[in-house]
Image (cartoon, rainbow, N blue to C red; front, side, top):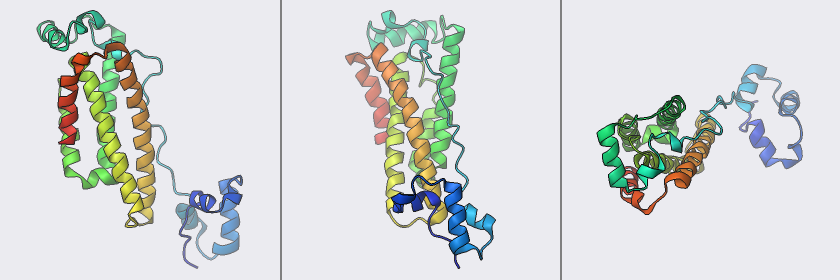
Length: 228
């Protein structure tokens, strides 16, 4: 008999009456009844593929990432252009305490992780333009030079994630993926959604701390960066 065409997860979705049965037990029962003539190890690799590592990059809970950019509200709220001139003259790391340096390093590491993970997705591998823009954004040393640019960069990553999610969903619904790629696409989607959750937290922090009408110009430049 050929290998099953569904994973146990898909089988439960198709037959809801089995939802509460432990996957390992259900897999063994189905094997004994229908697939005992194939190697059990190969059968398990098909119906219960090893999940991708769920230890996705997580930002530190409770850390003030938006407040990690040195001088803070008083300077920034004098106007985006004035704040950026101040940072240009005195340096972006002025008065950065250890916690602030760690927060900035966290975000930069997260960006690197997100870039790498998005480029590894099926959708990312097929989109050379997306790869180039991700690399360019990650390599930009000025992306986190001021609160304005940091907030806009976070939103740029949210845009990349939205695009990647839609592209992945389109691939999954195209009917063109084989079994292996279908599993990979589901794993990609899970990773994308996890990353978006973290970036959404960052975005909300920046909105609460720094949102003013004067951030729009810098944000729009970065948002156009991935849209155009």
